[in-house]
Image 1 (cartoon, rainbow, N blue to C red):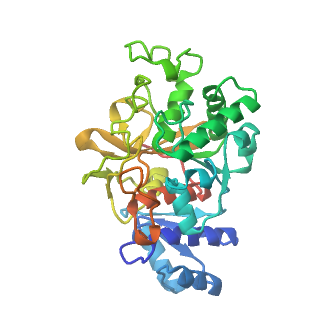
Image 2 (cartoon, one colour):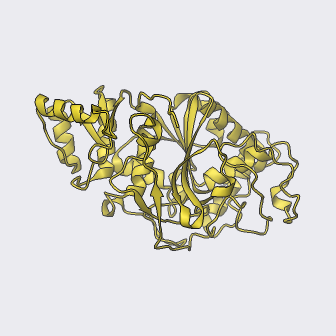
Image 3 (cartoon, helix red, strand yellow):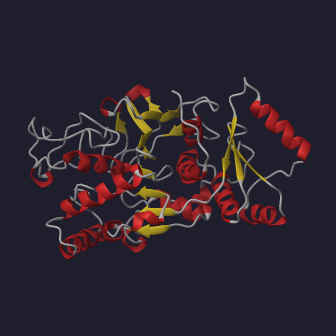
Length: 386
């Protein structure tokens, strides 16, 4: 999984395939970019060849040499055993409703050939999350404002569907329904689930949770100083002491430090932190990559404001020069959550950009961060010590 790999993204799909076939996979943290070690079989070799994945067949003696090097006390490397293929859920409207703005996680799961199930409000409220180990939140608006600004016909259609769903399920508004959904997802996470959210899905999830019982009307915010006075930050996962933007703004809150219109373009980079693979296994796993400087990319929530990140949240990647946090992790009860800002690591800014063709970006370090999270539930983990 270093620079010699021909297709980093599909290699994750091969690891998932092996797990589905009942074959354990050893993830060699920090060894050649976070390589995967799998027992040889003709089927695995054939799958690598068909999928265009670089691989090396090694002897038992060579394997032992690698493992000895990883186990050396001074080597910042480790071995994590992956045992089962996680059951993947994606919280999103159906694909045809987001056809020109497809979620990055859906794109990369399809490209890596990792199976998943799309579920949305009704399924969550029917407690179907128990069927899954890992859940991704697409670029959702959990405040019930339909993204605040809608330029696409598909978004207008989706807003109408959400309003009809809320009425049919007995909720007074989409805002009330989305809060109920957010609380079910939080319960799923606290019970041992793995939550991964990107872009506005991460920002508005925390806003909705913090606003419960506040009496705040997102649609009527005028921007007064006390507009956020009723927020209860003990209910949110990652952010605290943030303020809400007036309802006329395209921005939800000051959690977001980027322009919320997808037209932002940047030649800047954010940097991944390097952790101790032997002591801080979880953050080391989540930051495995062949590059540690990731090109900035935009979204409705482009980047997180470092000043409102809770002290217990672990920052995995940031652009310190502009006080932006891009990638954060935390624990909730027996579960885990990860927030990743921005919409598409390889996307072109603009509303009419079309879907990213990942065959043109098979080595994307920004997309590798997503796939690290997909395999995260498979790992035997030790509690971090920093």
